[in-house]
Image (tube, rainbow, N blue to C red; front, side, top):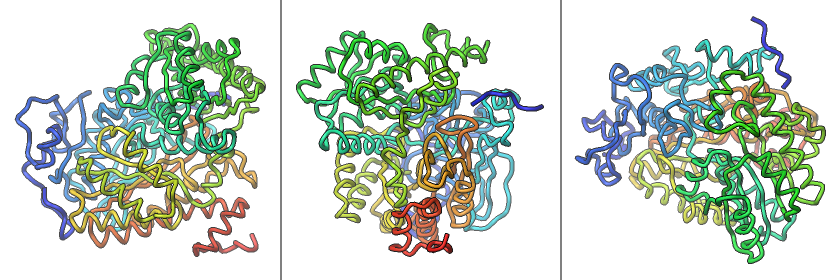
Length: 607
């Protein structure tokens, strides 16, 4: 069929642990998990990796195991098992019963049968075998070698002419694909913290650009408090500002309050305005949530002439069915979207056009307004907003200079489940880079402000010839028994060399190469050749089907010599490919970094 025409516990000493009899402690309390024994307290039903597929059919509560007992044959396969499950932890996932992790429809597995089959395959996978996962479904196990990835993942990839939402949904309804977003289908989502530092750094850059280095006394207006957007209120208050965040779903706002990303929820717009303007005048940081439709609220605030300094948005605009149009209730949302997706999409785009028109109005009044990479401008343009692209994207505005140096999101997860392991690695990272004051400030703020969701984790931004230094240190700490269990090291697909996304990461490239998708493919191939534990190649994450190709990698620090060798190669080559990509696009800072740090670029001086 031709596509539709949418326009748009013992520590590892010798490098291997045997499978322990107490491997079913996934739901134990923190204290019992640390001791390696199961709690006698009644708990919610939790499916551990050791549970058989026959015993686990359909939705259920899933949490990753803690401690050092293995249910797989090595930490190299236990790690993807736990991270798959961690993606579906109720503390982490947006709709775990539907296998949806974040971004409206980004899944960890195609269906529950596939989830169980993936878990079963990982439990018995050998150190010289590789599991292939096609859009959330395990499709094969092949004999490879110990340097090969244990898992290779491809999600949502479609041939160009077929790469539209209607065609994707048709294929999805046939059970042939799933939407993997970025870190949902690649099993390295760590909750809202995963986007927090990037959001924090974006607002910090705005503070330097416009407000003397601090957001104190400023008001930010934004929308969308889901897994990604939920980082915005804390990112603003960490920069000393005031923020009003709008979401149609009250439960999302309440969840952000519960997880300490949001201070409070106002009862109505009048109360919200009173709260934020008072805090603004007192130069006190405050984050306020408001239940409402962003299109309606943004337009109303513009009409009231409220002084707003910064405006952005992180609703799920990348998928029109995940954006609630004006006049539709949350209760009717799913039913109406399923009944007539074409009409619902048109209504959503009309509302997006109204929201973006209001954002352009704030831009005309002098506010700092930017698109946060969710395809809001593109969808609003389809909906009739002629000035949508007057609003700049956040990457060319604030982030690209970091990408030129191979700097990007570097995240790690404590497989022990013990927060003490993250505190120890926090200290180690600060000691490794003593001259990086911004990194120290971030680690200190994250340590005091960020509540862990699921397995304890941390994120920071590191660059080329930095990431591998941290990774090797973590591996050394595992080998020395300074950490209770191995560490998983990965990143968002939003990185300097792993994405082709003309509406986000590669918008406005100097040489016009915005849509060239060879780069993320090369990144995935390079990480596969370098020894990553699992590698993924996705389509459509962040900005929607037809608008991006992107790759991810994860490597496991289990304390072994082999792990150290893999870590050094992967965490050098991965950000190195980002420097390479920007050298090729003509960025002089990237060329200087390549020369300074010994990156081989065959045509560097005569490209």
